[in-house]
Amino acid sequence: MVSALLPLAIVFGLFWGIHAYGASMLPVDSRPAAYRAPDAVRRQYLGIESSITGFPKLNPVTVWWNIHLTRNDGVRRDQLQLLGQASRILNARQPAHSSTIRYQAAGVAGMVMISREWSFDEAVDTVIGESWYGRGAKGIEAASLAYFDAPLSSLHPEETLALLVLLRGPSYYDPVCRRERFEDRYSAMAERLHMDMGRAGAGKATARMLPATCD
Image (tube, rainbow, N blue to C red; front, side, top):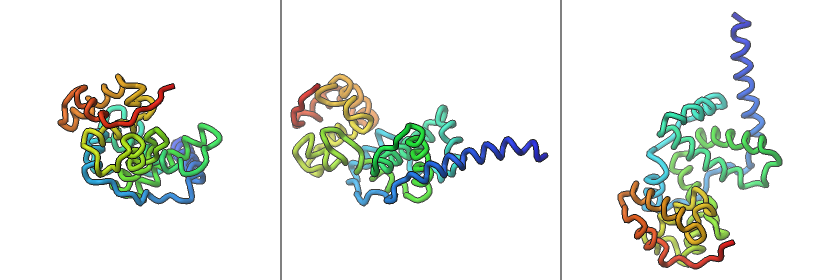
């Protein structure tokens, strides 16, 4: 009986060891952002990024099981994606880790911590309020100024959607330098929100956008 349980104990011990290693590297300031996204922006984010209203409380073992299950479970995938985004933002508050293993361990530990200590709304607002949007902008309020030279409260829904599109990669989906990629993703996200205007919608979203220099 003891010998049969030994492999299981080793696996559990490995998971807890990885978690302890990663948790030791989490930033001292592990609080969610104080920022509160406008309701309309939060609804857009949830409409294009996920179909969820919460996430499970994870531990060092179940986090790996949940990651495995995302292959065939869209809701679980969205939950883990939100936790992963929030964890990356959390770990970006301190200097970059010296190795990929340290970075990944801290990332998983952050997901566990956030799932247990942050509310769903706090995680969403942290992602919207502290993500990197390109053009030197951290957070959607700064992104509004960087892309439109206007406060977020003055933007049209098409324009706030254009900023949220950048969350998946501001360089890859740059609306000026990677126009076709941006338009493809913008059109798909607009359709999810029942704002289906195709590429015409992308044109309206960027009509007031400041020019940029491409590499």
